Length: 121
Image (cartoon, rainbow, N blue to C red):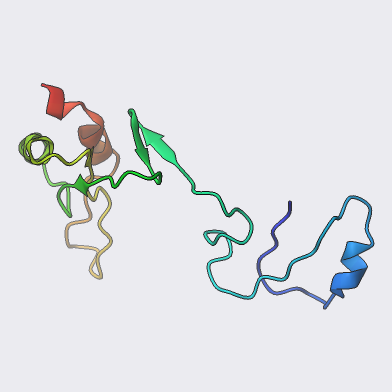
């Protein structure tokens, strides 16, 4: 299977592509979100994070701060998230702003804080 996105340099007839060796079928996709849609891959995409399967039949609740601001904040929020029954702690580590002088997030450090196993400690 091959998916092509973008604007072609020249128009190629679908029938010409179907004549190539190894080509079983050519399908023109006209809806948006080609890579995330179900035309190329109709099956659910399931991503596993530390034993939690996201994208399957179970509804997974994720919760956490919009902006990760401190290690202590992550500890407090992680315990509250776990106590509420949510399965995944989420938070914003990189915060783009219109002004370069406003808070930009803690980036990789915030990712490390979020990656610790706070709910079990």
